[in-house]
Image 1 (cartoon, rainbow, N blue to C red):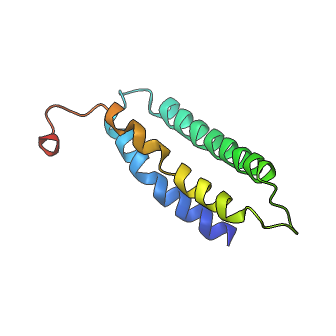
Image 2 (image 1 turned 90 degrees about the vertical axis):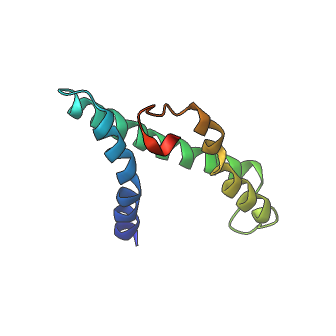
Length: 99
């Protein structure tokens, strides 16, 4: 189960790596890859800790599932948070898809 999730996570990360490869200046590819992977790993740690904190704050335990519905809703809605920053992406003015 964990192996499959790891593989699928890496496949999901592939578009980010492809975009980074296109935008990366020559000579710093390794540094950019290391920075991206560090950021990806840090985000995983922060996400896990935030989820654990939210679980504790809502009082969801192994024997009390009273607020599990709220926990599920909050966790699912939080995945939409990055959409607020879509307009911050720098688009290539020469790219025909931007028109």
